[in-house]
Length: 142
Image 1 (tube, rainbow, N blue to C red):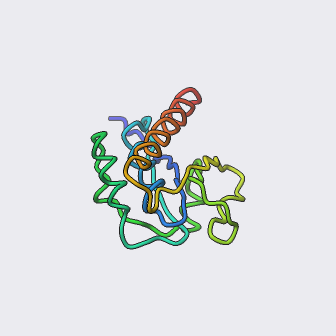
Image 2 (image 1 turned 90 degrees about the horizontal axis):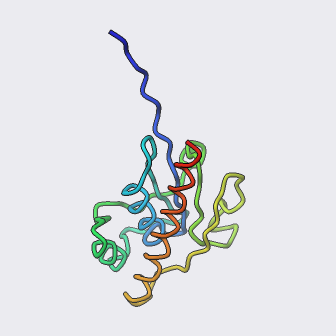
Image 3 (image 1 turned 90 degrees about the vertical axis):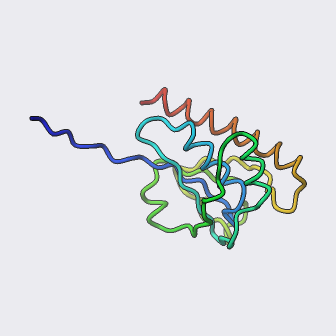
């Protein structure tokens, strides 16, 4: 009998300041579309206690439930263990030092905080499109 060593999963890290909207939506989309052996995690430099309820609602509209996801603080281990890091749009070095890492994708997506639901739908759709492009790029390089 042969035993096969299972390859460790590769993680894609989505980062924003509060880890309450953009990065949570990206995590949900990536985990839906993820190629085999990949998973998404998200984190923030100043996480909050609750995910934006409107972000949860607009993701439900596309059959992705992020209600159980939690806002997490960005750690050095998360950075070190990620294949790619996506900065969702924070621009200050103090609040988002990941902006200055070498394997970083910078999407510069508008913060959905305090925006009406129509704007969150636009932001969600932009994140969906970018995640699909990211997944397609990963699949072509596997």
